[in-house]
Length: 99
Image (cartoon, rainbow, N blue to C red; front, top):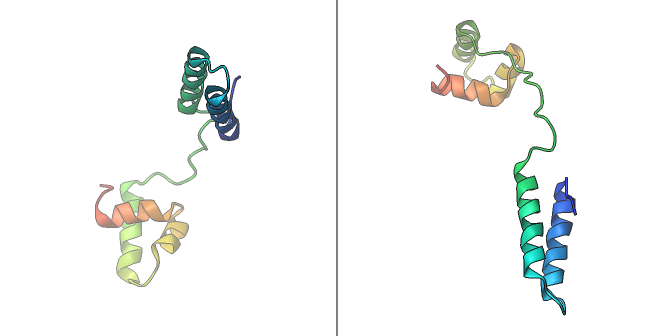
C-alpha cells in the first residue's frame, strides 16, 4: 500500500479503519500503514511552481507606492498587474511588511 496522492491516502486510512473494525484486527499492521501514510503526507509529491512575480526591488517598491499616491482608488490587484507581481506583495509593500 503506497499512497502517493490525497485520494489514495484517504483510501488507505479508510482501509485501516475497516481492518481495525473487522473480525481479525491487526494493530501492528495498522500502525505500520498509518506510519507510511503519515510519512507520505509530509513528502512533497510535486515540485513547487516557479516564481513568476518580479523581485521587489527598491525601484519596484517605489513604483508601487507612487501608483498608490497618484490614485488612491486603484485596487491592489491592478497595481500588482501593472508592476508584474500579485496583490499580496503589493499589500505587504504598502503596509511596510516588505522593506
